[in-house]
Amino acid sequence: MLKSFIEVSPESDFPILNLPYGIFSTQENSNPRVGTRLGDFIIDLAFLDEQKLFDQQYGFFVDTSLNRFMSMGREVWQRIRQRLTELLSEGGDTVWEEAMRMRALIPAGDVQMHLPVVIGDYTDFYASREHATNVGIMFRGKENALMPNWLHLPVGYHGRASSVVLSGTDVIRPRGQVAVKGSPPEFISSRQLDFELEMGFFIGTGNPLSEPISIENAHEHIFGMVLLNDWSARDIQAWEYQPLGPFLAKNFATSISPWVVTMDALEPFRVQGPHQDPAPLPYLKSDSPSGYDITLEVTLQSAAMDDAQTISCSNMKHLYWSMEQMLAHHTVTGCNMRTGDLCGTGTISGKIEDSFGSLLELTWRGEKPIQLPGGEERKFLQDGDTVVMKGYCQGDGYRVGFGEVTGKIFPAK
Ligand code: MN
Image (cartoon, rainbow, N blue to C red; front, side, top):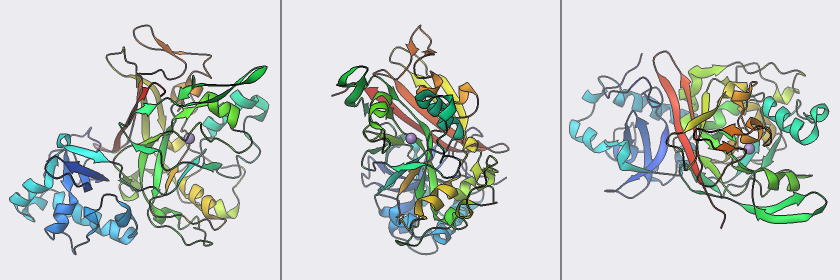
């Protein structure tokens, strides 16, 4: 197995087989710039580029976002990944001088992370059959759980890019209209604030207007993935969502993890997705395995708790619709995707209760509250609650992971 000259624990999310990309700054150099992560170190790629350690000087590693790098396309992504692997692998330390390594390697605790991508557009899908079924049963009853379109296309809506925030950003409880039975609606602080366990994927290279991305080519347009928490106000959502879908219930905050894990790092963890019956229309049909075996976990910690409690364990492989299908569907009209666009998969729920990816499902809309140590219980999120999501692919003796996306709830303003 490929190893680095830097010691990395088998439980670390960031062995040399990962090499994700992010934007960081340090106290000594406050310019946000591109880095990768290896074990407990950040590697300053702007410095490596300046020292001419790549095959050419790329220039885009000094940028404050990954966008220019992402727009270069797969061939450049792979060339840089290969060179980084060379420089950082066992024996690679002979290729560059110790003085350089001292400058390039920064302890992870000494950096501040920034939003990695300038996000032009954000689209959120609804690709988990289990999640769609659960929500459908709660809102419309068992007979009408899945809408007639659901098994034929990946349902999605255009979300809000401006409020996509980095992990660790405070989440302020939103206010809005909610329905009151038999009376006019009320304007309140949401009483049903929720999280949604999702994965996000970033578009590397886009497509020109009116030229759809085919299902066969979809994969090479995707730069990489992050953990995504699509915070949701269920009471606002229930009143506003018909007929155009969610609006204010989802536009106040969407949190993402700081490290973008590349599709090349995730390649060994591709698996066959669920069998699709009825067969999708030809523009959505693909025979290549397009699911990913990514273990996902959600923890909740209230202000009163000493430790976080795990409340859900799910896996990306449960998703019915693949990212390739989402992208082919998104662009089939000729809609143009652009570098840096973000797509969310939708809440990733598994079949069993412990694997549901939202409180709405875990507590069955508040009917079955979650019991927390210390006697507290939760139907929905309270002020002071912290939600942490983690994700990783388990290899043989190593992990390729995403780190975490965390957010704490603060009172409405
Ligand atoms: Mn969502």
